[in-house]
Image (cartoon, rainbow, N blue to C red; front, side, top):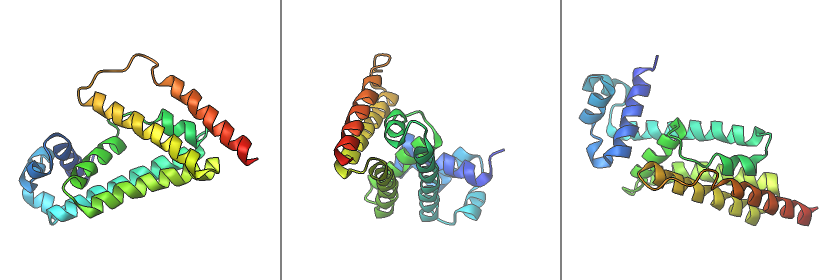
Length: 182
């Protein structure tokens, strides 16, 4: 069973994603979470605290993803590119919701997103031993994610297997980097 706190954060994220920051009022969040405004204020005494809760959620989810990336049998580079699809996961929803707060100029939202992004780049750099190659792999994954998000929001779906060739490209550039370094 989902806790009231998690339901409130889910409702806040959903409102940010679908309606934007201005519509994500405390009243709207409470109604969407099916809690009283007092119940919401018990967990999050202000809208600012609600945003901090979302930043914390993103940090935890991104750290879990970073752990999976480090431990992936296929290696961090293939994992990053393969998993760069918007699948409406809790991490996806947290990233998009925090991005909506970033659009308002919230420096904490920017810092939360940059911390996750920097962690993923660090893992790629550690695994590949070349910062430029790590950046290239990250940009491939980020581009795939952007396109997948666009499709999720009503863009045209890709042809089946359209992105599979990019894993081969990742293999080629990471193999080249390893050969050049060793």
